Length: 135
Image (cartoon, rainbow, N blue to C red; front, side, top):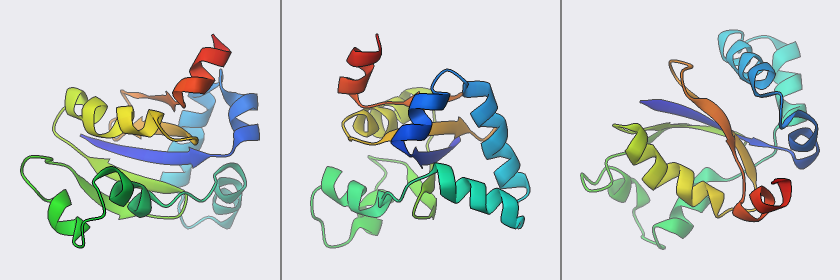
């Protein structure tokens, strides 16, 4: 399973939190038309910079060779593509994605939108404090 993880700006999150299908279509079109400057400008407008590499270093400790740790069979997931606003993660199952990706992302102050490669699984990953406020 592969998941594209986008760090979304707070004001966009507030306006589009309940428009999940619209955001899913937008991110899929961004992926399909990645050479289009219009889509890339829109993507830059709604996403924010988030250092996934630094975040992983913080979660897994300050190991000198994070790459070696990421390929460890015990963790069994990998960062396939990293950008300033999005990242592509790969794992074996939805349970593993929850354990190694979704749950740690909930501990951040940032809100993320996640789309599974097949498009079957998608939605928001919000900080736990924000989830309590929205309920």
